[in-house]
Image (cartoon, rainbow, N blue to C red):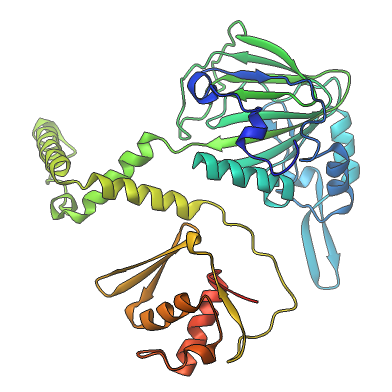
Length: 397
């Protein structure tokens, strides 16, 4: 995988993926390129993280079979003077458990490992669904997790070693994230697929497909890219939430509703009448737009890079406005909203002249906008500009 990772480079650009496989069928992709994911992560990277970085629980965990070890089994507390660091990996204990068949898990490693952060960021931008990356390191001749399904879409990227996989038909097609796998009583049928992932291979599993894996004679490193999807249930929930604007939905349920046939009839009739009213009065575009805005607000922003060479903003500090494609300004009933990178900031209408002057100039100092009609006073303008810089709308040049 060279260049900036994205959905195309991950999948090798199969044109029919979303037609044939997404939420439908597993996909095993082998391009004959063992080093295809080498720029994302290596075993040596994981060894360094564990041995010499400040990685701590829950960023590193141990698992065996179908469960996770309690953190006190492989972490320790370190004291230095009055300072205390908890959850510090005990490398000797981890090594011993790893040798006996435990799997090392690095959950949500995209939070701190830049190549995975970039990949997850690009996937989330392309799919509009939430994306995370977990990493698994397993010794040779070891069985991983017992058969289970995930409630998110799964892309397995094999980094090093080989891993044998069994995939079974889903007992529950496309389970919602509120419907986790129930191990009790599950009897695995004949596998739908049996395959071995080699370095550079990709395996896609729609949520609900039961799977289990074991290493060969060598260790295995693989990345699981999980895509937690928003379903029509979430959109329907958005619609139901919009009903709060109708006073009839805010009325209490009728007295005695929880007992007897009369209470049941009253519930059914009242619910039917209100839903019919809601259907006829709903602004469907507004509901859909509300869902879009909620998802955009939850999506990760480009990370803020810490800079030590900045100056406290003063009258002559040169500031630059964010690119126009990143934000939108709206005004409604005296309330100004600034939507920036999917986040919505509510601003009082009184700041409008100052904000418009800033947008018009793109690059400016406080002195440049001091004479704008209706402009905030010097103290207010400074506080407003500092706020906009903190939120990422402005940056110092």
